[in-house]
Image 1 (cartoon, helix red, strand yellow):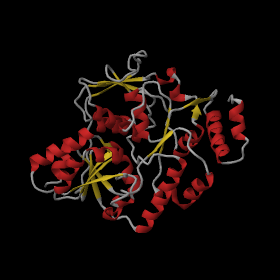
Image 2 (cartoon, rainbow, N blue to C red):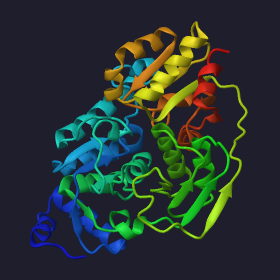
Image 3 (spheres, one colour):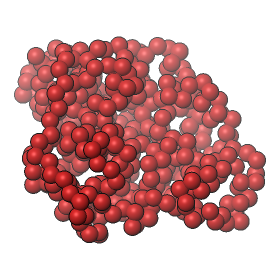
Image 4 (cartoon, rainbow, N blue to C red):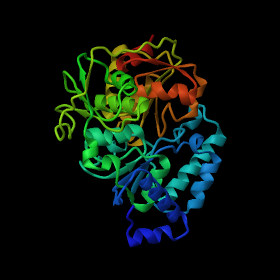
Length: 375
């Protein structure tokens, strides 16, 4: 891989910056990148203390680096203000806060969300280094930005250097679809993505019989990315690059997409990825129709940005017994482990809750989840 003289000097410094350059060079050589390219925004995943642990925390401390570009970070393992209410113990909370302070000292914005595009939306063609799978697929597919599916470490390295290896989805021709998915039913996009992610490879282009909302595109992508190694999709007549390429000859038709999970939920959790303003308003409208307070523990997760912009609605939901948390989610927080069965509308949570939190899962649409809480 070609390096400029300036980049070669960064390799020779013998400090944390050199370590980050080494990571990017190794990654570039593995994937055959010809050079490094500048990025405008890095997003780092895996910032829960439970993921990083003491060894990872010490490694970050010893790097002694500063971020060169706008850098945001994923949800932590707890709500920074309501961690005790979530059932998080004090020792975990102290370590989590210490970890976040390290990121802050490096220059990260403590966004603590998997939906950084709600805070600042990347433009079409903008190069990024994002590590959150649901954000990666949303940025590539819905926004037309360009990022590979980075690891937390490679995204951090790119944040320090301000560059990323030029390969994969940064290159236009690599963004072409290889399979057409004709959706002949009015399927729940989250369930469709959950099923198709494990059945197809590459970059699908979907043909629906209706237009999907922005929230549905988010749900489709998050599910695809969780069950498959998929970092981009197209939707005919909807996503920004759908007509930049030929429609592939290989195709598959879907006339049904449903899932059966049977359990008695002791927690209903929404917000994986973090809920948008419109999704929270949808919850509020249904709650208002139901009347009274919820009878099952009900958690909603969103970003601090959305939370702060909707305080009146949040307060009304809280009065109905729904807890609206920020900074974290049901997948990355150990708080979920004390429940036996979690009902959710997230295909991503269906994938990761059993693996990471060891709980049984049950699926329902947003409306079904809300109504279940009142039974």
